[in-house]
Amino acid sequence: MRARSRTPTEQELEIMKIVWRLGRATVRDVYEALRERRKIAYTTVMTMMNILEDKKYLSKQADDRAYVYQAARPRGEVVKAMVREFVDRVFNGSAEPLLVQLIKDRRLSAKDLAKIARMIREGG
Image (cartoon, rainbow, N blue to C red; front, side):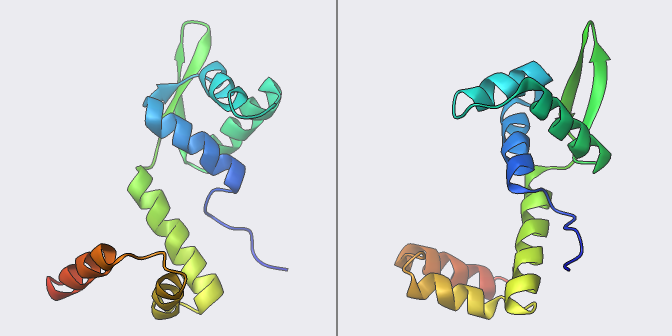
């Protein structure tokens, strides 16, 4: 069995995207945003936000009668960790096969490729 991932699950990432977008959010704020897309229980959202706090992705502060959550990690840091974990798991740590696959699937335009080439020339 594979070790438990340190990166957010699909549902946790959905919550993180909402919190990143809003900056600060209560469970109610996140619940309402999720309900626009699908049916979900308020208690499920609350549980998942508590899990994200335990995993150190969210922090919370008491504000009147509700906790207000904010991201404890910047979006870029989380995305970087998720990409690194994916490349390690699927491509044994080599990003080249990922890029080749993206090019074959036409997921990278000529403009994207030119930008990547420029970044490589500039050292990152």
